[in-house]
Length: 314
Image (cartoon, rainbow, N blue to C red; front, side):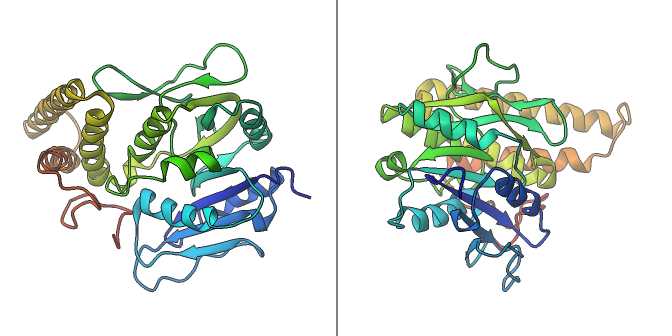
């Protein structure tokens, strides 16, 4: 019998590396039955073989790489159309891992505190006790940062947003506010969803005693990472803080371009170790991200962007 019958898990995968395997094992260990798990597969190439899944786990395959927002929305539409008796949906990226007891603590907190529309566990870097996130904070200028220090006390620690790698959302909240904004494609879409959920009157929080592992993927896609963080970060700042957010985004872009230019010049004159190519890739991503924000170009990252990494077939 399932340890959490009122929960469905939605796992987003990409490619054929099988990185989702340990996550599915952790869900099994936490007491979820295979029928409670839906895997959405974003293919890295056209006609890619389906990922290998345990018996009973459902698979939903997209025609192309829809990014995080589109892939999750595909799965959410499937789950929200299911008349089954469940009231919470656990969203997971394929590189997340639940540690022992995390699901029980998350679900219990959600049932005890219905004003919270979104909950997340504390996130640690994979295989360590080094904090990655105790929830996200948005400052007055729209800048987002992970909270790295464990909040005091037990129970739930309120925050502005949580990382999309592991988030528990109430079904009725999603029905009311909708899913992710697919114009973001990837990065900051979870912050924007949390913003809408809060504006609808719900709280967002982290359950410090529930712990999961996360493996941030920015280094796997440096150009796309820089591009999307700048473009989507500026758009989130605008939506969250209005004019102050626009000014803050412009200031952050200017500082980032100045720092990258200085690093590039230092490496050119060999005053600093390391090649220039990685700096060029980041610089192109930052520049084009802000340019596309200004001209309101959203959706998948440009196909000719350097440093695309694992974002093919978009």
